[in-house]
Length: 174
Image (cartoon, rainbow, N blue to C red; front, side):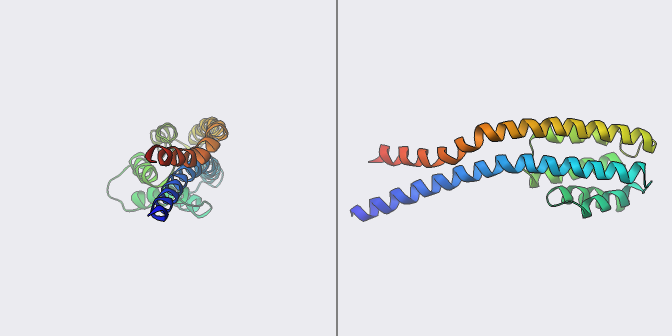
């Protein structure tokens, strides 16, 4: 009977530890995704302003140089725009953001920064879009730095906290 209690205790501590490690991983992924997003926006900005690539093709090319989930965001936006369902570039961009919301570790604040680009995308000439995309990149960079600070402060807390919480629960049950 004692071995059942020991196995149950170990399983509980392990489960809580995995939960904590998963939370720590999510915190780290957010800063990586923000960095990837910033580089992708820089690539998109160059496609639009220097190459004068049509928006749908620029979104597809940007997706090709990114990793998921950021690549999926650009693919989804390009797919919606290419489908010719009467969507504007801004509406296709917003639908891409909805896809990204479900697939990434980005917070609502990060997605709100991206949403501001929907208002300008495809609505002005390439030089205005360039300026706006540069501004969005700077805002994403600020969010990236905040995410790194949060990562430094909270990643160890999540990592160890899960195991410690599991041990506390086991001690309370004993």
